[in-house]
Image (cartoon, rainbow, N blue to C red; front, side):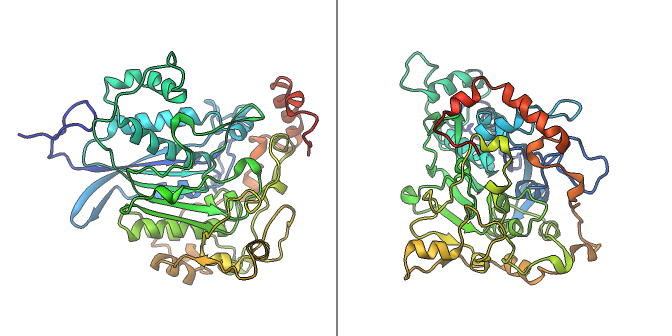
Length: 460
């Protein structure tokens, strides 16, 4: 019997084995879908967020796909976000908030995802990577790592850390070992991101750029489809988005980067009121299913939509959250306000989702926020927004926007969250009364924090 050669060393593969899709989901900072709050009374004490779009899509992946007569198993790997770690008693670490703010723990997330793919990939398989926030950064770095070194064999994985060290600083010949060139090109079918945050910091001032010798904004040539949902209203300087540089786009690549109304978690999910993130969720799902990239349970996705009866605003008209306004004192020590207009992220000829045109021009929390009027004023009187086209699934979801998903008992009913079941994200699951003590404890664990910030920095 003939066999197929391996992708990059390792064992050959029996051609009779059914191909599969490796579907990897990397959640955002502080987000852990396995302990996110729902209606359950026994939710873990360290539950720190509501469900994100990453979790929702991961739960909608069917066991296998059948497109054009080809059956593929769909294997899901879900990875919780930075700062969501907990012990056996579901108690989180006192420094998780700071890990999330600095993002330094992202390296271990990248290594874990890469190792999973290298261990399980066989020629003919599809690789699909999803990510939100620094989880999107993780997904994109993994795609770059696969393009740069391929997928290591079981024997080569023993030298992975040495290769990693070299890529982290190739100018230092004594640092690690140069990785072998890829034996073949490993195609990546999809990289789908919600508001990529690429900021990783060593301390308070030193930002890590282009880690692993991979440009943060690079569009990897072996990625076939790249999708990116971006936030217009995010206003924290350490949560500025990293867009793909489309100047290197190949003719056969599909790249779609679309801006949505709302803050960072209004796009990626994580708020109790998630009407805005529903819109970006439906866009992403529409893109994936219309191109037959994965087989998703559309009924499950449809029933994830928010329902608040008469309190629910019309499609696209919900108030965006003000991330900086909602930021707690401890986090404001290391981040400052900056709109995406001022930061240059919303520049050139960006494509926006049609719902952006309905975004409120009068905001409930206007501090350090922008509206369409501000954008138009910045670009000039002749500027007109460029809008993406609604897909068929999006149109359907817009039509049933105000209907109650719980009325149809024949469809899967995802559980939803209640405010009285969750504590603010930054408290790490402790009561508000105890948070002041928690803040003092965390600050005391960072040597010379205030000295490091410097007298010139404004402490908010």
